[in-house]
Image (cartoon, rainbow, N blue to C red; front, side, top):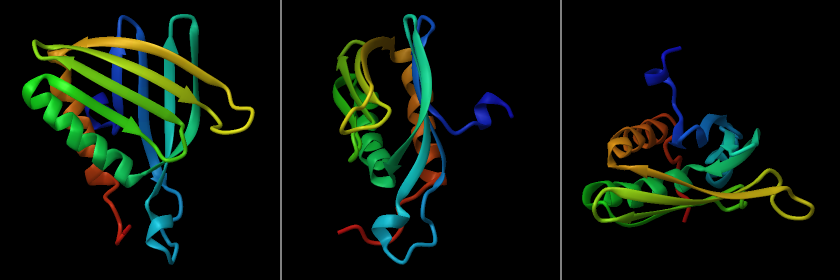
Length: 151
């Protein structure tokens, strides 16, 4: 599989990275729309000497909300885009300075809640990477669209 064909959102900086790779809907055949919108996702991390991966569960709307904020950041390079999932597996806060530099604060937890392991770190990137990142988010949303009514 060519890297361009892969459906993954990745932020990388000097060998360090976080990537979110949606794998499948968890309960696509469920009767409830809420349950149909959970996505099994592989999270890969490398931060300094720390590295690993785990499976997380995100909702389709987590990616949609993030993509809306990220698109605004992509268009003017200034502001904040947040990825906050309901369960607390990953928290990304991307801050743009308006001239093409971005800082990302990351909090990752392999089992949110009681007795979880977590890692906090930050990455930087510049505007040369943002177009591909925005494209990858759109690919995720197209492959795993919101199903039904979540109101």
